Length: 354
Image 1: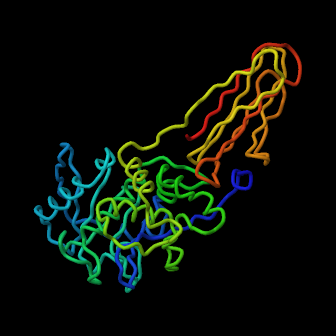
Image 2: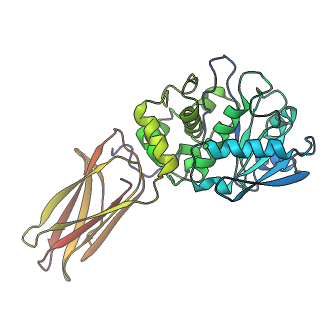
């Protein structure tokens, strides 16, 4: 782990989900959430002429807008909302807004150039999906994908945007949600530059190796299990565990670190405590000794040193903002030491993702 569990900055790139066995790849776009984004500025050109609030089964409304090129259609809006409500989801659905555009304008509204073949998009500060107006059971402009599929894939992005998986400056929207991303060792693969979190450009290989896009495709396969996998072989096709983890990310998502406390007896000056890691994320350790003592903690993975605190007194801390595993279960050993001073038990508290 020591090669992976270090602080560093990685460039954010992204990959796309598999959608069909045909040679022409599925293309969508995740819009930047920053108001200054050029993609966001392009999408903002599609100021909706009309908005219809459509109630969900849970009782709250979703705002469905129509571009000026599409006559407002309450029945169409209701069918899209009913479909979204039928998908696996949590309370993040209430945070979504929808813009329905003419199929011929989706590419441009989603930040593409004419001919890029972008079939839908998601993002912006308002967490909006832009989808074609042709109806659920129609195909997209290229004839290869159903509008149901496009909506499902875009909703996968919305789930990620409302999940916690901040690591290396990226988010769940770039990396995928915590359980799936950790199972697929996305952090480690990103550091090795095998996958490209956040990439939404025209390099189709990098787009297909974007964990955020691969996650959206895995989510779509919860609904379309027969869908052929045409994206990164490093992140799919998902096996049974990956699909189960995806289901956890949707219905019972990760929210916070686990905290565990160990005690070194007063008669000892050194003791190691093992913590098995199954998820990637932030790590922290605090070692506390009796007043007047000097304590420290050293962290190792196998024979490799991960880090250590500085022994300055009766309390010492160590933190790592981003920890990536190299294998499914990676055990860290936290070794508490007493450098001198008063005797008495020493407490070691470790915070880890799980």
